[in-house]
Length: 270
Length: 122
Image (cartoon, rainbow over all chains, first blue to last red; front, side, top):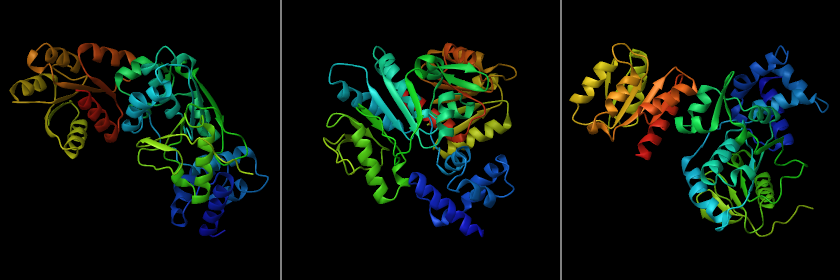
């Protein structure tokens, strides 16, 4: 296939499987992202790899490599300090309403796990008595990213970003290959692959839902659907939905940049 | 804001100097702990000390301890930078009086973000 056809095949695949919009002028990603994956999966060209991975009956492990390669995994611990200061100083107090209790929190599009671990650390620091009883659902469309997060071994470069020495000493242990959150944090998190537009139901009854820096990758129609699902996952009228500090939702009630009280009711798609 | 970068590696001194200047800092440098201490004592003001650990003449841990023993430098923020990527080293650095410890290798983005956090905490 000519390169533009290969790229269009990738674009169609990503739109079809997970709603991610890739632009026509991003074809440089073919070389940047798919050459090493093609090599690793035993294909002698990107074209051969893309053909194999986008077949209707393509092996799931091959499909996962393409989804993983073409989704953006940019994430780090305590990304966007303003967001986390709001979480710790404002949102948690609103959720507790004066009576701290175990929480259910969903980190949607958790990538390689830094966000759910950040949630666990923030709870351990702000609400140490109830943190051990909280549940954090960590999901991402990429199974490979979810597996990485669940293994939880982070390199020096990864922990350098967002974790000061005090937090490293408090929350991490040294293991072969890097640093891993301590069991008290890992035990709080339930990991699974989840497509925000897929047929599998999202978590429900969540006190807090986070979905940051992902909505930009959807078209308008799919973005609206995802936002409805995020609100449906939260407790109606009392749960909170958190997006990036500069992202704006059209559902729910804004309380502070990036944070919304969940809608009281969400129409379920027929 | 004025920073002193102390490292026996010319490459690290250059990288840190460039990153800090890009972030608006005025920067002085020194190539070992003793020169760093002398520079600090002669500077009219200093807001941040960024120091390596393993250096000739006076190593970084001893530099931090000496700095912290002076009332004059009680408000000085100190960040250690080292390739000793073990949790025991982080603990030793904080115990000596450092405010943070950045493991090598680091990106300039991480370094400046961590410095911002240290300065914000002050």
